[in-house]
Length: 543
Image 1 (spheres, rainbow, N blue to C red):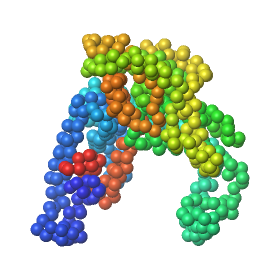
Image 2: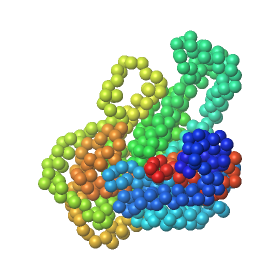
Image 3: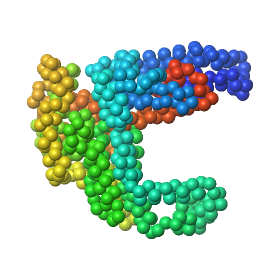
Image 4: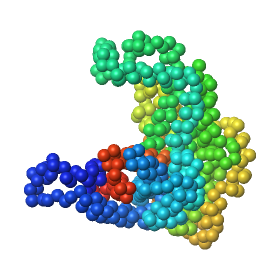
């Protein structure tokens, strides 16, 4: 059964003659059961066992707070729809954990009310109370956003979806770039369909000493009536898009959290504000920067500004790579962190006396060390590359973009239109943001560390230098959780939230293999269980 689920094998493999002969050779006395036995008996039995084991890992002790991703997918072959729910949490040892909770059959219309019912049902099934639900990462569909509000589940729009919209809104809406992309596609089509052209390209590159041909070099000028201006335009568009590609790869990693969003957005904004190598594409850069600001740094009411959003800000602060470096309103950030620490301390008092004796010394030492140490995008060894060595265009763009993180983090940005707009909105935001959390803090009886002790912990933490950007933030908290015990509790909650919904998208990429054309008659319930087992069986190798 495990092989069928993990390798996307059909139940009918149990009746394939070659497979029967293989098992007869390996174990002559073994009689393989029928396909119905696997679908009707072994599948639900294995599903029940793995679900029980995953449920045990999701209890309140191992997972006090859980983040989620969700998506809706429709099979092309069976025309059945499914809604996913993946869970993400940080355990008591600050290890990153995740699992697929559900890929449930979703019949009927995908209205907000039906989404509310499905999500609430899945939360009840997995015994995750509202108090333990942190944030769900979703796509930008209005029905999904409304459905989650009805279910009283806090949610954020997938960062990668927003970046995709930023690029589509600006770059790929311009006629010159649309025409340029069409020409490039025709080149690719030509080489993909002509063996003669491929051989000629291979020979030309061999003459240049290139053993593994990867892209057109010598023959483009003869096979594409492009001008030098078009080549220059290609290079300049690459300079604009390369940072978006790099961020997409980083955010798609399982280690990426919501705390990466603000630094990425601020660095992108700075990169797009520079004027080198932009002759002929100034309008394009301006439009893409405006699109970035409209979708992620908006000054308008009821629009997203990640630098003024409590969930994004707190997650950034508790990430030891960033802390307060990329935030304009540092006092509001510390205030929000302190409120969350009060809530965590009220729920489970932390032992703050471990380092109380050295507190003053730690604070003074931190103040001396903090300075303007930049956040390093790479290790020092990698940064000390020979500057005289020739660099490819891709490497040059990569280095230029990395500098933007350091430039922003090592100096206070001057006031601009965005800052003045933020000042007008701040008083209203401070009064309206997350009133539910504030009221929960007030309802708790004060116990554990005092407010002054918590404030001192915040100061000690924020004054110490940031760690290198290539480090895993959970490694820091694994080692320092006793030094900053209450902030560690906040970090455990907020660093559980991924920056994107790629987990659900990968789940449904596999769903395409489960619901293949020759398995179009697969029952939705069996499909749910197969998807669940495919992703969760590797977590329990001895099952």
